[in-house]
Length: 484
Image (cartoon, rainbow, N blue to C red; front, side, top):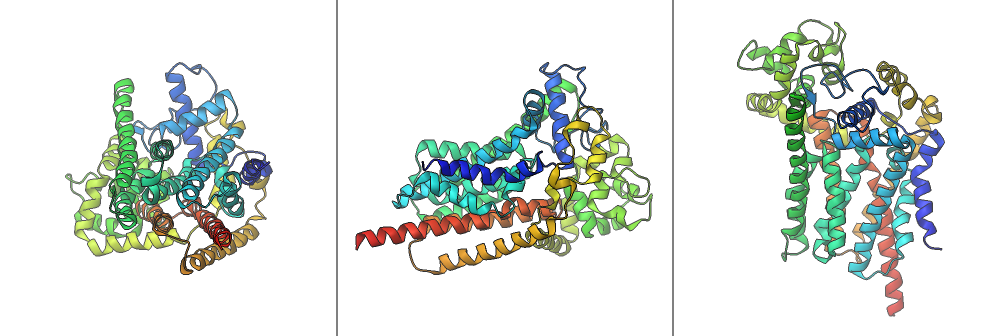
């Protein structure tokens, strides 16, 4: 009967999707779907004449845009295939179930290792399910229902934290499972690669804190996840060039973020025009209007109107040049204004860390209208559900979430300030999760732009940790009483 706890945990993960009657989605979800269906058509799996949507799918012009500047590499081809396969051969309604099973599998891995290493003898079905059940009153069920790879971010943080604290005592099957989850996260969303890169040295430090013996094993495994993710991107780039003769380019997230923050725009005011700086073409495009909102990152990247647009109004050649110049341009700006650039990154990291509402998981009318402009199956696949159609309940739920996160933080602090039973491995696990949350904020807030979606995808780890630490303490107390 204890296995019924797994069913309870799954229900707690899925209740938002069930109440909504449909998965939740973002505009990028449409981009993933379009890219995936086009890949399946190229492979001959889907009929090329099948009605999906207009547009080439995956161009720099946005979700499935028709721009010829290159193939947008920002959307993972693997996650795109997942959505396309479920939509074409089963139902997108099954994606939340897969997400829930991944959450449960990762939780079972964490609890199994912690319980065995410390000899707590926890009942695995209950102990793996309890932190998930507690987290059901947080952002977790919204991200389980979300047709985006964001649910993999907290799972990535959990497996990296687990490897850092416990890899010396983990069995090969457990290590391989953690490696598989982390690698899947690395190839399913581009933000996970810089997160892995920043977690790698932190993992090395954490492993050294636990024990000098084989300290290198945890950062080695994190490095393998990173290398496999980068290798997949390289293979995709080569494959696209061979098959389509197109170049894979990545949207200039760093450039537009620094423009909105100020350092990049001030640099361009001083340096442009300059033929040796490709990004000066974007500066020229930004002068076509005097509306101050044209300088926001989202408008620069996505807007096509003469009043607010810039990047998408440029020639495909200039778009490609600006996109490919974003890393060299970043270093130009950093060398020109190191204090201003550093301050912008830190400020955005703080803003990101403080943003954790779930509102961005709920599709809005403008997202649906824009998505339906592509026509085809999108008109029926991406529509409002019960919860997203009427969001009057959202403010009350957000207040509940805020209380849950505050209480969870207090519970975690209470446990860590109390003596025993927490030894170095579990303390390092907790520390790595917190550092991972901050790294997520730095990558998403500093490199992209602060958005509630990025913070909310990992904040449910607070109630998860609070519940896990409570289980460990109660198990330790029970064992202590048995020994008396």
